[in-house]
Image 1 (cartoon, helix red, strand yellow):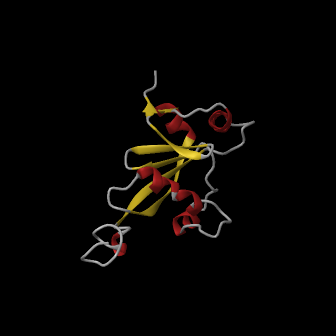
Image 2 (tube, one colour; image 1 turned 120 degrees about the vertical axis):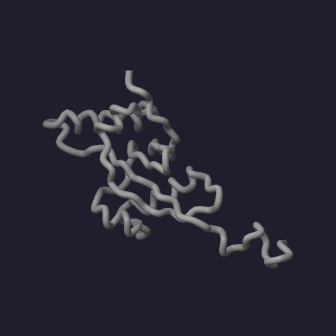
Image 3 (cartoon, one colour; image 1 turned 180 degrees about the horizontal axis):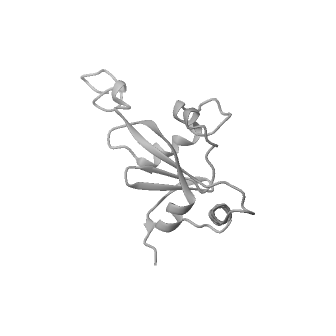
Length: 142
């Protein structure tokens, strides 16, 4: 027990549990008519590869061509946050129907998150893979 606060836990007490917010940028893979648009067909293939072929890398070219910035959200975070935890908090906030949608998601007027989407906290990128977010670095194009 902390002698100064009379509480269990860190020295700052419960009020300091979330001492900041971090901006998370959401990038969604392009949707369109895959029969008429090559960009939509390529985006569909990318989502398929992430889901079924364990793809967990993206090139600069793929990211630039196949993703659109859907919006940004402010996620409460502790000091020295685990960025994976911060990004994981995005899932219920950016999925319709769970009752926990953030105002940023509602304002973005976009679809729910899905496998293949990307979240960024500063320069750190995460790809939504089956079951979790995976940290990635964009590969340099050949």
